[in-house]
Image 1 (tube, rainbow, N blue to C red):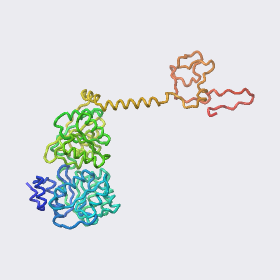
Image 2: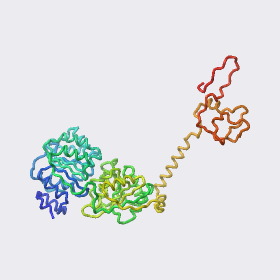
Image 3: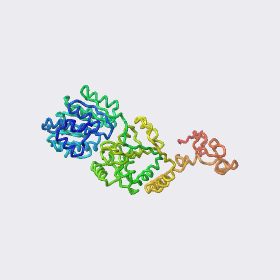
Image 4: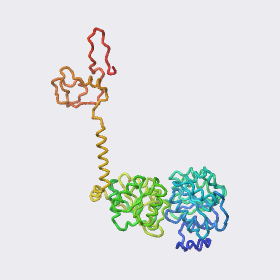
Length: 488
């Protein structure tokens, strides 16, 4: 069995790995590290949770240790692009952990925070810069960062970059890089667009490493789908948390608002929960993650920004409250559990309108996920009706309906001016009641027989001929009367 000591890594790196208790590399690490150490470009494909970060961080640090020199001012020797703030922070921490005996300098740049601290950190230059594309472009525009001294360029989670629309910003950033550099691409899947980008940016004949089929799920994760109505998902989630084995759980939703609502439901049920999504400030996101890692909250409710970049070994369960629109995201979501050799459980809720998403997921992952049907479950119905937030939502909906009813115009009310409405509604000779309102056929009847259907039902939507209007009274003069129209 290959060990880290067999790979020829620098002694300071081996010491740091021993401090962390790491002795045996994962398959992606064992195959990628020698090629990166030799200076070749690399295209690595591996499912989430297999140790891709160490697969590029360790050989990069080895190369920096072998060629120690100062980084350029306001620049860096290594640039790592990451799709999310959380993943960028985690990559930066990994570089600091593995390079703690080397004195390597690391800076992390992302949006959502002020520029001042980032500018000061970069002023003297750093060995490793980890950045999200948007904030890096902002710094390049302000000329507070230069990329002319980059020796190694890393694009991590390239397929998520594609999903988030970062392909054009990446091409824009690459224009600032020197042509003579080493390029490392890592991804869990390899869509056609990413393969095209890799061929554009990498040197000829890169070293390719693929340790798992594309879009496959982690083997140590036990998966299950539960069919349930959308309205009863919150009750089902609370029922799951009643089991003690749900110790540390990540709950995924599709929307930011949905994440907040689910977190509030869990809090109301007595389950400590925190929400994390793009509308939260960076401080709020960091505090939520810290509380989750420390075990202060049992549930972290998140959108897909947390599908990658959260590396917490003790996550016991992943619950997909809503199935993702992108099938590959299912793989990344459940990859948050069963990490570091542990087992994990993934539960997905599927409503009737999500069955197409489930079919896409099973097609992409080439597996049939075991299912359980909880539709029309009487117990979930009772729980749903008893939930305080559901009662509050019903009351709010009732108030809105009552308010709308008070402002609604009476049905059948005409928008004609009062004078014209009076002329149109004036009874015919005899002034009897209208037919259809209890007047019968005797005593006048309706003066517009073409507006009356069988049985006396009034057809208020039928256009009224202008010729049927009874015009205004004339003054009796002998002059020929002008034809009257409603516009008069």
